[in-house]
Image 1 (cartoon, rainbow, N blue to C red):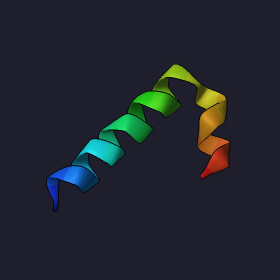
Image 2 (cartoon, rainbow, N blue to C red):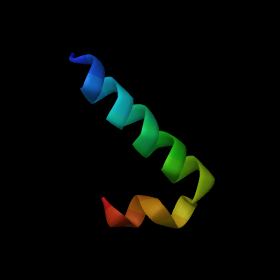
Image 3 (cartoon, rainbow, N blue to C red):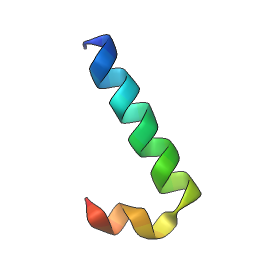
Length: 26
């Protein structure tokens, strides 16, 4: 995996954790 992809994945994961409703956006 590219470092950028990992960064985005972590950012998305943190967003979902901080805002459970955010997972619906996926």
